[in-house]
Image 1 (cartoon, rainbow over the protein chains, first blue to last red):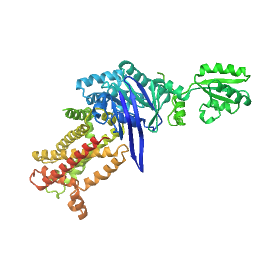
Image 2: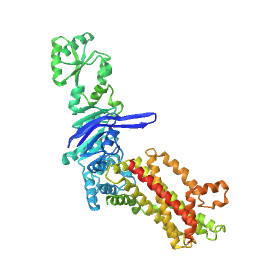
Image 3: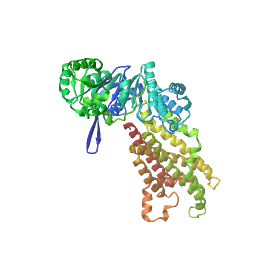
Length: 339
Length: 249
């Protein structure tokens, strides 16, 4: 569905140039749900704007839905849907009128556009709002309208730029319900950007992490987490003297001790423990199986463990492992939506 | 063919709010209407205006309306550029040029309706209707209005996403252009520098032409100059406008 090679975009700014996207290589197969993850300013939106023909690339090529974004932007536009970061409906226009206009923009006849407008109104539970103006809708309703506008022409590929940003948890869950249903019912290829880690983790089957205009990781969330961050065991020992022998045992069991550097332990509970009692943090492949094994080994060696816990990694740990920075510093943390 | 259809799509979209609330047209006419009713009678008592005060005054009011309406047309575009609706339409296969032409057509229709209404309201006040002249005058007004509307769209595109430039330029140009065109009072009474400034103002020529046409005088040089000025504004506006639209936003 999407094939990009060496896509770059440079913006001229006062006193020089900024490379927003530097050499993007990307292949997305039909039917995939891809989350494009990265901090603000990483190049997510710029990439999306290039792939949707809104912005010509400085260099590089890409075919989207079988059409070249530079040579045949109109062909790309006819085959994709795009739901931007901002609200797509004009303030002066009624909800249904905008949906009809949208259908007309894609070449539907008046009658077809009317039928289709009513269909998407039903699909996104917007019927009661058909004659209202966007300004009178709630944030969640407006976002549903944006999605409805993007669906009028039944695109096989849909780009969504931060579809759930700024919404309350309930509306976010509702938006996701619609997005996932779309995929289940029509097999739509979905390419979305988000800076909500939990969303990318829970919803996308493929996560692409972008930073400073480059792709730094690409895979399933599970894969990325186990490859790049890994599970952790956190053990609280009773005496400081046991730390060294416990660490040796951990290494012997294929664990990597990560404790001595408190800067790389973002887990707040670990830090609070370490103030009073010795804490050992060990990276392992699978925390659930490693813990009993390790506890037995420590017991045999006569080392007393006061507390033990396992931590599954998050995509933030992945980002941290890759860049040394936390995504949370830039993105706003919000409660996890229910899929 | 698809260009025509796209233009119709944009035109219909823009017209829908007007169809749904035609009184909105009156609302944007408040200022010219106030001038017509509250300022016109004062002028009509004056004897300096060649004995035909309403034929002198009404064209000026039409130009005033023409400057405020189409110039502000860019404002609606700016709002859409700052919001996401313009971007949404730019990702559709809709023709870029049709986006401009469709919007301009809407300004054309609105101006025609408002101009017709204003002239109709001026007749009971004492406007002597020279129909061929008035119709030609309206046509000239529309050519000018289309050009101004297109220029206003260009300004909006250049000003996005901030918009400050748009407000600055419209605030700084509309009123001086209006005052220096002798819309309200003849500039002949002003000092030489003001008369020079007026002579450099294209609006002056259009006002002069409108006044000549409203008295039925087709063959005066004023009509020719006014037509040239209006055509120049329209050509400039449409050229810059289509270029801005094609280059992308």
